Length: 280
Image (cartoon, rainbow, N blue to C red; front, side):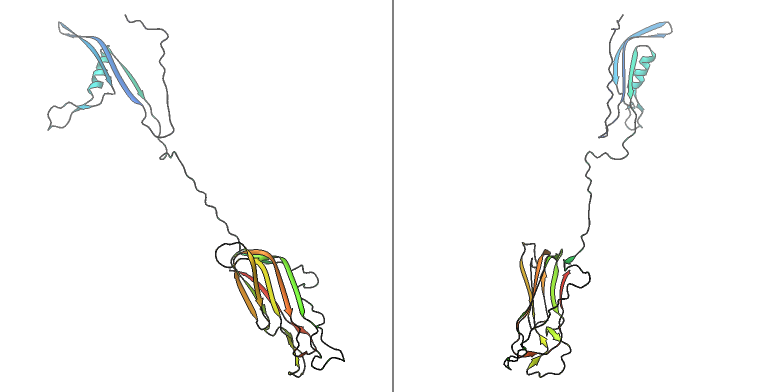
């Protein structure tokens, strides 16, 4: 008699994996050894048996090729017969489970597309308004030669230049832009109520030049900033300069040279200069 060894251990390793998908275990093993006794009437027949079948599959046992196949799992039939005759044994393992809900992806790329906008803007700090508008520039008295001892060819002419200096430390645009300077009149400062006068000897306007400078870049590719200049002369009404994005201080100078050709008619001389920064 075969002695059963005490303490024999059968270790079952159960392995599962999340991915990739693999076939689940489905095993069937048969083994048998011994002697089969069969009684046929008075005759006793005996035959030794010794077999193993591992995962037996159906096979065609029909020897005639042109007839339909006759599929029989011979190994399973013999294995089950051996069990019934008391000379065989069987080992089966069948694992069941559910598949992934969809194809597993070992590597996942996720892209997050971000976008936002920066508004086009131009800035020019021109002081704080409280009780008066600081952009209204009072020239005071425009001096003329009023002495009794003046030569008649010099009487009532300007005694000196008019000069206005303006500076802001904050100016610029954050996109391609156009810097424009425009006077309201090509005549410059104009006396709108001069009364009657001899046009050969007097005038009722004072021409002036406007010049602006800043640190910027011309249109084109990105580049380091440099000094940019825009000037509108005595006999011009407007001018412009196309720029890329820039920010810097801006200096503006308004100059009216002293006139020596004619005298000035008395009255108020007015003129407006408009500086426009336009992002486009």
